[in-house]
Length: 205
Image 1 (spheres, one colour):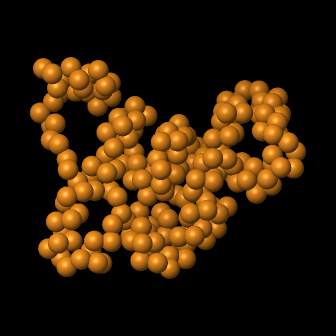
Image 2 (image 1 turned 60 degrees about the vertical axis):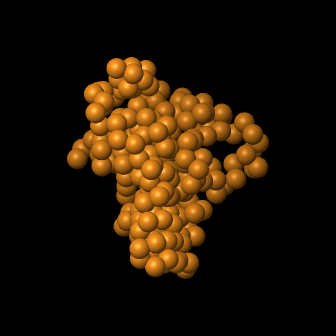
C-alpha cells in the first residue's frame, strides 16, 4: 500500500506538471526552450531527485494531452459509442469531470509503463486495455511491451464495436468472435519476462 501510494503521488505530480504545461501554453508564452529551462531549474532545486530531465517533462505533457481532451468529452457520454467505451473501461473513467484529478487506475501503473503506452497506443481505448492488463497481470515493462508487440488488444477482441447494439444476437456474437483470431501457443515454455529470441527459439524447438 505504501509503494502504491508513493507511486500515485509521483504520478499525480507528473499529471499536474503536464497539465500546467498544456494550460499555460508554456512554449507560446516563454519560447520553445521553456521546458529545458524548467528541467534545469527542477534539477537545481531537487538535486537528489530523478525524473526531471527535459525529455521526461515532454512525456508528462504528452501524457496529460493524450487522455485529458478525450476523457473530458467522454464525461458527458452522450453517444452510444461513448457509453460503450465507458462500459468497457469500468468505473475508473466513468465520472471524469475534473481534469485536475488523475484517474485512480493510473496510480497502480509505473511511470515507464505509462510512457510506453502513450507512445505506442493509437487510442484511449487501446491504452485503457493495456493499463488494466498491466494491473491485472502485474506486468513488468518488458511484459507490457511483449503484449503490445503481439497486438493483444486486437487479438483479444479489445477493439470497441457496436455489434451488440446493431446486429441480432447470433450475428453479433459471431462478428465479435471473428475479430479475436487468437493462436494458442500455450504449449511453449518460456519465462514470463521472455525476450523475442526466447520465444522464437521455443517455437522452433
